[in-house]
Figure (cartoon, one colour):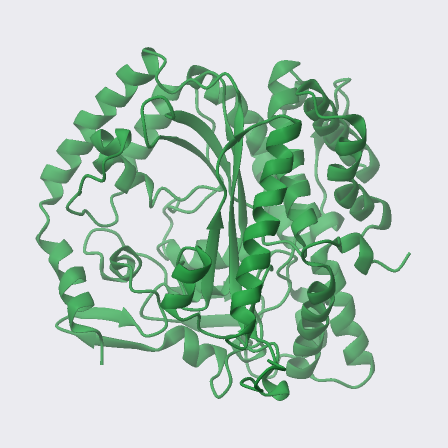
Length: 518
């Protein structure tokens, strides 16, 4: 039976005046443009930040044996009181938790602060969750369902009351449940990938996936189109290098699928397809989740959000923030799902900023790898616009094709790149030599010492050198299990437990490089 108050709250959204809401968005759209012209969203420091999503799994508790050893690695729901205790935020599923770091200026101290904050907060959280017989996992997709449930059962469990459908295992945030109950926009609520199909009545299947999202606050808001153009073009090689979701839970595959099928036909980053097929309408429309077109001005970026389909209107409550005056616009932006997204907000007028939110990257094996992605992205956002790197001459259609090739094939994808010298290349050495070289120059331009830069970027360079990504590592573990006679379920869960075991040893202080057999 669904929670009565939650049902009432979701149903109440249907009474919000759709046209009045859109009129408010239009008024705020004009105010935002005026604020940009006045320089309100400028930030000369070029600050950075990070959103970091996790899921919880069972972890045997040696103190009181609360979690049986046989359950280790199985998905677990995180008690809401526990989220408050560890200072994390709820995400879509009851098994999720999210950390958002405090923005810091991009310099030697800002980068160190980001890394220290993540490690400090995560270490404290792990200590608390251990007492509950669970731990938080940094990954791109979970593949071992909770004890006593199949993944399909967990993802599709729902109840309908008074015409409102509520997902049983979804967090109680009204906005999450409202997505499946919108009367204005249709969403997919399906999984569609090689050998995988799943139909649901809510968007709960999206909770399979977890991500990291680095942010870069641009110094001048009016220059955001330049940063956006470069972010679109680095998306494919960064996605390929960081792919980490090659398998689904075994019971999501069609009957008769073998582990050989899943390995041979599966994609390196199913996370992209999950987000798109669950939240996009099953039609020929472009979809709310997509690789976006370029923008020509900051004003056009605002127009794009305002003109995007409104999923669900809401009554906007003021929270004492500067950007409350753009509350309707910000609500609409919340469902403006693009793989690279411009953001305009701020808790106070001095803290108002325009930033690039980089959304293609799955959760990574360790904190050091996560900070490597943040550092590389930040360095690129400094260096490429600063030097007018010719990468922005790469056609948008080529960048689009690159992106989905990277989703499918990871480092084996056929990606086109333009180097600093203006040469077109498809060679992996040429692509990553230039990409990581530009990231290095950008970090050094912000005063980050050479030794620190080398340390930040080394995890990514090692992946290139050894041609190994988290996705290919998991696939190899599954292949080894298959060679030993394991069938689909056993092979996928063997690979996942190997991932969890290595992460236990390296999450806070190690690196994915430690996992690679040199």
